[in-house]
Image (tube, rainbow, N blue to C red; front, top):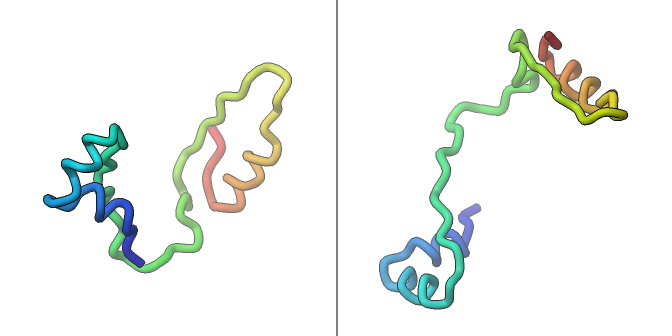
Length: 71
């Protein structure tokens, strides 16, 4: 599904209007062309840096379920 606001902000006719209103002009980000991969982080290293008092248990669980190695 195309992003209408992104298209509007980057169209040659409407981009000057968007700039004149002071609105941001987002860039088009590259999108994956490959099919979905269930374990996106399989065999990849991950490191968490958390503030004091937060052990990051939920984030650690999510990363490990995605296949990441916790260093």
